[in-house]
Amino acid sequence: MNSLTAFGVLVVFGVNLATSDAAVMRKDNLYGPRYRPLWEKGAKTQFTKNFSPTSLKSMTEKAGFIYENFKLTTEDGYLINLNRIINPDSVNKKDKGFPLLLMNGFMMHSDAWVVQKEMDSNIAFVFAALGYDVWLGDQRGTIRSTGHVNMSSDAHNQKYWDHAFDEISVYDTSAFIDFILVQTGYRKLNFMCISLGCTFHAVLISERPQYNDKILAAFYFVPLVNNIARVMDMPVTLQLNFLIGEINTVSYEDQGIYVIAPRLSGIKKEIYHGCIPFAGVAVSLVKQSLHGALHFPPETVCHLSALSIGGGSTKTAKQILQVYKEANFAKFDYGRKRNMELYGQEAPPFYNVSRITSFVAIYYSDADGFSTVEVRGK
Ligand SMILES: *[C@@H]1O[C@H](CO)[C@@H](O)[C@H](O)[C@H]1NC(C)=O
Ligand SMILES: *[C@@H]1O[C@H](CO)[C@@H](O)[C@H](O)[C@H]1NC(C)=O
Image (cartoon, rainbow, N blue to C red; front, top):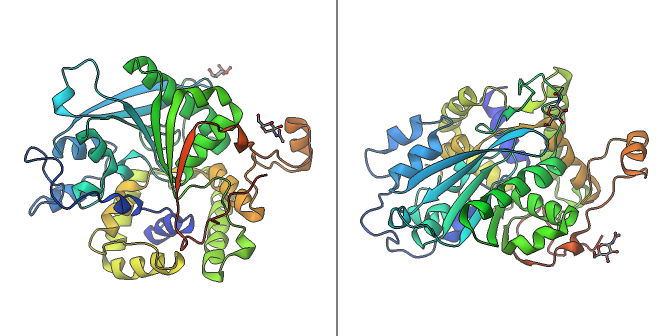
């Protein structure tokens, strides 16, 4: 996979890397003198070279916070990574503040929450500075979450990669929430998400409504939930993205590869170096495909993309393509015969989002062609 294809993948699913730009809270430095900007003069080179699984740790520490991580085992045996950002003021306190879980989007991992040039645009740091206990979940299949109790995550091992957002939502997201509540002693937490991360919340609660009681409030940014637009109704520039996505996914599986972007550390460097000469083009492409709705600073777009990309299964990509095809927020479609065996009906069942009774705030934009303002009541 060349770097432009990799970049294409990011663009295809409208991974809105600049979302957290919307969170610019105020102009002055919220953090006080202790916290240093990530992009101060001279620090830039050091920052950009670091595209490793430990980038999140080094960026967190560089910003003046303390980093912790935990390995959890899900009900179905996946070993997943949960990150915590601790405010130095609360390091010795038992109560580190009200817990906030952040979940990233498709093909991303937790680093996506801390890569903005302006410190105040990095939601994870903003809330840690404000006194929240901030946790960032790396869903299965992303760069720090590739273990399993008895399966290898080799790109050709279809069994390991045989998961889509159906499984990530129910198993990984519940594991993150339960672990955080036990660890902190709080009875509820707040949940914040970008894009597919919001799918995880909606699917989990639809499948296990008891999680309503564990979440005080959820904040959706560009969610991929019941507001998805049908590909057919989208402008041609957006439709093209789905075609490219489908071709990419099929060509991976034809080669017996079940993960998008295998060998990710190398690919991150490729994305970065491949993107740099085309940064201006990349920005205008993304802007065009999202109707100018984004504010990507061209000088940072390559860093943002390379650091944010975390990987994912081809099956997750297929499920996203499926839900957009008819704008059905439903379980994975295996075809009539297998659907009948699994679900007892020919078409995959819709997720029943009316089971979400806890508070949800949805942030959306009229210019977002991937979503509709109307939330469907299917
Ligand atoms: C692998 O682990 C899973 C989850 O713990 C379990 O359900 C399964 O039976 C195990 N398979 C083998 C072959 O041990
Ligand atoms: C969806 O959930 C609601 C609330 O639990 C229930 O009343 C309704 O019957 C469910 N709808 C379907 C189609 O299962």
